[in-house]
Image (tube, rainbow, N blue to C red; front, side, top):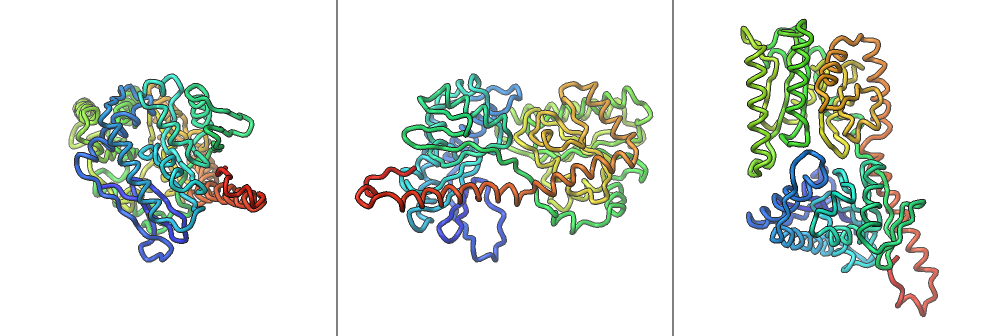
Amino acid sequence: MAHGAGIADRDVLLRRDGLDVPPANPLYRLRRVWLDEHEERGYYYGFANEGLWPLCHRAHVQPVFRSADFAMYRTVNARFAEAVCEEVEGETPLILVQDYHFAIAPRVIRARLPFSTIVAFWHIPWPAPREFASCPWGRPLLEGLLGSSIVGFQTPGDCRSFVDTVERSLDADVNRGRNAITYAGRRTMVRVYPVSVEWPSRWTRQSPPIETCRADVRRQLQLPPDVRLGVGIDRLDYTKGINEKFLAVEQLLESHPEFRERFVFVQIAEPSRECLPPYQRVRSRLLDTAHRINGRFGRNGYRPIILLESHHEPADIYRLYRAADLCYVGSLHDGMNLVAKEFVSARDDDRGVLVLSEFTGAARELAGALIVNPCAIDDAAHALAEALTMGDKEQSERMRIMRSIVAEFNTYRWAGEMLADAARLRAYRAARHQNQPRHSQAHMLPA
């Protein structure tokens, strides 16, 4: 199923994965677009997740591009765009289009609503021009996104890659000083909007005290009360580096025998896209690795790795965050990674250590983390040992730095900056339209 959500008073948001809005809020209404199994297979599992997802993530999985999948992607994008156009009121709506599922939608919306202000936010990394060139339908994807007034990305590097790709692929005028692209007579701004988490976190406020979480989690997992606990929270995806995390735990126990039977790593790996072969292969590999390491170091009921393959509600995840001595985010390539920021937001005791992959957008912001290359297994194991031996004072100093960053640059600021830029652009264009001579307004192209 896929759906978009409409915002009353002429403003619309389009996102495949839905919008978390209070159901009783009268300012919001939900518009669902239903897909049959064939459409979902071609649009979502096919082009979006066998094609675009590996194209945008450097994780050693070859993209698969089928013409039938792209045709379905284009068709579904047009259907969502049509739903948006039916929701809006007036000729100048503000429209937010989110993520790689909807690259073509902005141009389709623009054709129907030429004076709309469209923001397209791309949540995942943008590939380098040479990598993007492997997509047979790169040009219509770029033209689709350039139907937007603003295209937003997680990091400055993603912005540069997008601008470089446009410059290499299209006959466009690129103004790097202003981060602006003019194509087919229309200007599109390219901006950085690092996504974040809610602050203060409702889940932290609703969680039991830290000591209660520690006792409850250890009791649920049948662990001794004094065992040191590491956690990883991911979808079961080849981009998340879960197998590399397991290998780092193995190396930790090999090089630091004092942590044997004293340290357990709990990995939540929520099933994802299970019908796709790369996901089936990564699951099989994880199970084999966990089984081998547990067989090597486990004894008397002790297992160094606990792999939980199921969906967990936020309340349960936040109890794990609050119970843990460390959280390891080991993504091989990630746009931002909100698990890192969630862990920080959960630790109102200023304790716990974040071990964070350098290949996440979050590594640019969370200076208090231990930054690692997850592929360098020895170095990652050393960081785990450092986290487990770090004193309370250093933990507190590092966590306070990170909590201040997440508090200031929270999800409300992310959304606020993006929508404020769009509102200013809409106001500027409206003022320019009003200042046009009356005899020329009928012939004026939208800016």
